[in-house]
Image 1 (tube, rainbow, N blue to C red):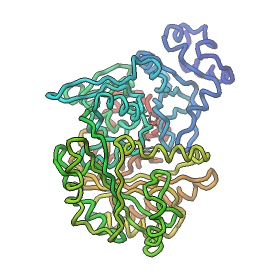
Image 2 (image 1 turned 120 degrees about the vertical axis):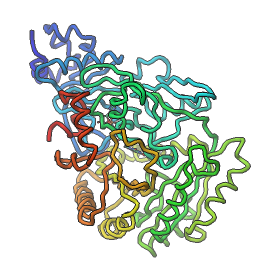
Image 3 (image 1 turned 90 degrees about the vertical axis):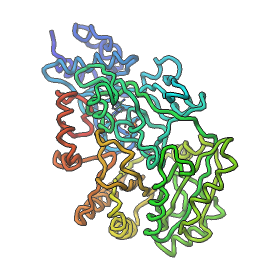
Image 4 (image 1 turned 30 degrees about the vertical axis):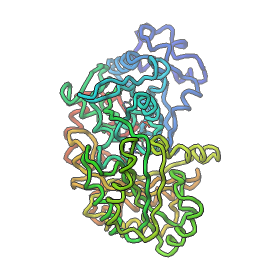
Length: 522
Ligand code: FAD
């Protein structure tokens, strides 16, 4: 009877063999007894495909890749690890769009969640509910948000809260938060989930919600994959609009820009007529064109007058809003939008408008991705830094970071986002960490670099973090990455104790999501 760790060590000698794991270990009764034995791959191509991510900064080789066809396969795998005297680590991999190896498992097993898709009945998205109690979709954790959107639109429904980019999995974004311009009003994606099926680090399949196994429910939402693998989530839906009025306004003054943003997000009732559906903001700097891969909003005929403002001021701040409408509201949408915008202080004449379909709006980043892919510029290093900054220090952040570091270093090439959200749309019982203030800003430095020079961006990122530290700006990282245990304890602050207790409860052998480097490998 051979322990699993021995089996894994045997795998070293099987690398190069493209047969499933079981084929080279047929003598092993324990693994042969498992349904998953034939679904573990150890060939170099399979291992390579899960050894890097969108960040292209970290590389970690697992010993095997599990291609599950059922939730039970995941249960079986985790049980083997949990019951072994020397457990091996396991990472769920959604779409691998992390930037720091978060979905990797050094010497462990990566669960390729996408494999579940091929075995679901229909689309893997089931819509239920009614007008009285509300609508929802039961969605596989492996599903991409674009597919959830497409499937729910068939019923004239859609989720309320999205990410800017829809080719991310439900399990992947719910492990972080899932934020975008809708968050100020509808909350992050984690605040729009009713129920989940989760396989814990003990190999137990648990259905959890705010009313049932609620500790696990809140732990998993924003839990960085530490407590279990999400195999199903029940997502809130509402009737989908048809079209979107999409507006951008330019500012040279950061104080007026943020004042206007904060004014607009104060209209945030979920059912409040007249309120915006989306609000974001970004920096325009001397980068050749006011457009970037994330968006090609500005028509070329407007480029020269926008660029002249950038040349004059160094940084121009772009406030971006959207208002949805359908056949019932098409005659009032313009009036409502004008009402909201009329007191704003953007630069005269520098307001730009588009009228697009709802899907075109939500899927706005995809065309930029396809263009970069065709130029070979998508699979490059992405030394991203995402922060939450308290409202009370956002002006200091502009002066110390945007003006003193980003503008002066002149290396920033990708989009820089800055937009506020309301704390009361988040649920503090969840694992996600945000600043203490009622309003805080998401700031995203979404750098792309060449393979040789991502170190320059890392230097800039470090300088930004140091600047905040020195100035006492109590930022929190979003999609966090910390190199030390102390860093993680600081990150979670008053939530650390609960986070660690939940880990001991749901994944006591610290099997899951080792690539986050919170409990393992530090
Ligand atoms: P992966 O990278 O595969 O996994 C991320 C983490 O979640 C890992 O720790 C993994 O083990 C864990 N995990 C994956 N699946 C599961 C599961 N089923 N159950 C439990 N744990 C799981 N984020 C935003 O909030 N808003 C945005 O607008 C946004 N835009 C983005 C645009 C681009 C181009 C990219 C590359 C990323 C963007 N992100 C955004 C970040 C993104 O939400 C996270 O990186 C997310 O984790 C990626 O999802 P994924 O499916 O690729 O997850």
